[in-house]
Image (cartoon, rainbow, N blue to C red):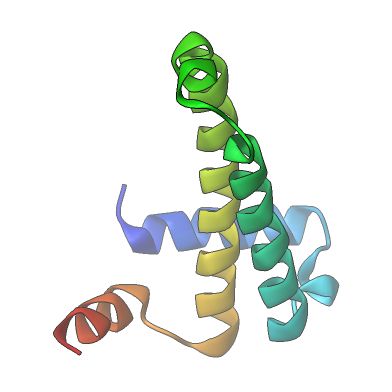
Length: 94
């Protein structure tokens, strides 16, 4: 699946739930910040041995948060007409 197909799926997902009304760039950026914090929280205060003992649980939780982060990044790009792929490569060049 390419980024365009993902964007289409997310637009449909958002429309079905009537979330468009909440998806201003301001709200999306705040939601993105919250999701990034939830990813950090998974690892907060964790010792290496705790991580090693709970890798499957940590992986599952991290995967969910990364997916949420990706959702909000894609939505932000949709709302602001940012070409995500182009923005990525332009930033890499900087």
